[in-house]
Image (tube, rainbow, N blue to C red; front, side, top):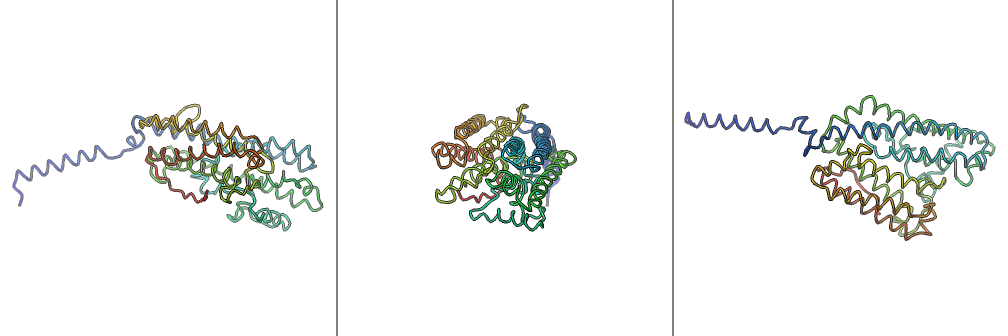
Length: 366
């Protein structure tokens, strides 16, 4: 049995604990600001200055690609094929600036999978055969998940720039082939437009409002996507063609943009875009500033240095990458090692500093 004094003391203790607990609860304001850093402002910058504009830019580049492709398809020859290349390259480079944001509406639609599953071929060319089967039969459904490697940029790369592309586009019965190119291009425009509009109309508000760092949060997504894109650069874009999964046997045809010969430019653009996203663009309000606000200035400087060194090493590789994998192994090795160092810094050190758990599974085996 409690005495009156103990009862009063107990009531006061409960009151104090309740007051303390309320004072320490996580309110929207507390979540939005960490060490004086405004996370809402950072997410707003990402949405309005980097991610949404990237989709808008790609949509414009795809619109410009349509007449360029149509001009080539009207009378396919080497000259028109070369005239087409700059528009194709511009659109593919623009995609590299959207591939980072494989979350939200992009994740729902499997946007990156349909736009750029790498590569559009396997060791036995079975994926290319599936494309050829689609064309010959005239029957296909590009919305099926099983068709991700039969469409998008890799498929256009093959259909428009393979060594026998012109021959096949001018052969008897080429109407199905020309239609397939058009269907792929329409599908890409529809996918990008859908993701872009969802970002503008609904997802932007959700993205900016959630300033937590747990799994499924925007900051959690951002950190995971940095690590994932670096794994993609280390694996499918560089490591796999270089033979890191095949005991040193080079598979040059696994290069992104292999047939058009723009693999190196795509890798450089991908990495340069990642650095821009890390810094937050011209506003300078990105994860870089957040890391500094958490008293990790040295880590931030190291990451920026690793970015620069990796980009410089990629730029030092003589193009095309498919040939450099065999003829310039020293330069490729140097770039690959720098990319590994940057990947570790982002996937381990940055994630730890921001209290974000890496949730995707890396099973590239290299």
